[in-house]
Length: 297
Image 1 (cartoon, rainbow, N blue to C red):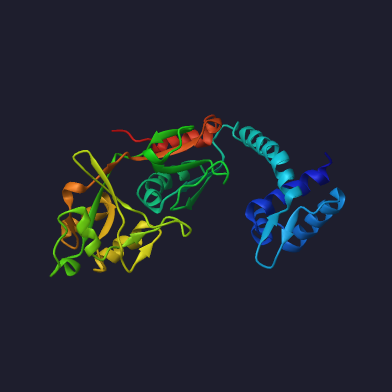
Image 2 (cartoon, one colour):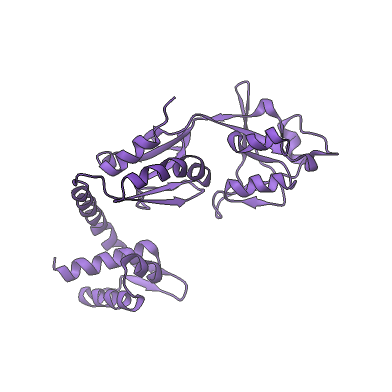
């Protein structure tokens, strides 16, 4: 393969992955017009149309999909090998891309990694806040952070937090004059602050547990968010009951700004874990980050 074809196919893969000339051009550090010219030149050499372009989107044609399936794994292998060579230097170096929830990023990743990174200036850390579960291989992340029971069995996972207890809370201003829920079914009579992890998905069902009995309760309310911190603020403002990690509610429970309900139905989830594909285990940079995050009793 000529150097010209190599570069042009890399450009095509970037556009196909991002579904956007604008984002792909920014990622590659070239102008949008130059990238468009590169793709047209590649299509002309192959005699095939690789991308369908509209005013709103870009998507691969059938020929484009065949090219992706054929060459993308090979280019990924080359990229991984080059990254491994870069990491042979004395100090860990390179970029680590991690997908995590806002809760994990704020309570675990930032507090720990913000102290680690200055010691290793050649290490770059990219954290993407993704409420929904993400396919880290397809999305080209080095690692992800989720609760232990959410992680696929074929991933390597390392615990980075203790178990997480969930609580249902409300502000005194909301609870005043309203009957407090005594059973999970009573939640349907209350204004509840909802979570939707993906804008294409349904509302998150509150998971409750008592004496070995597990329930999933779907609640209704005027407010819905796709991350946890606005849920906390909405609860403090008296907009309804909220379901959240106890660690976020604890200071407000102590101050009296929030009060817990249905305490005996509070479940505990296996703590947060960082997970990654087994082929990434040998990466010195990722190993450095995993060891820094590893939970120690």
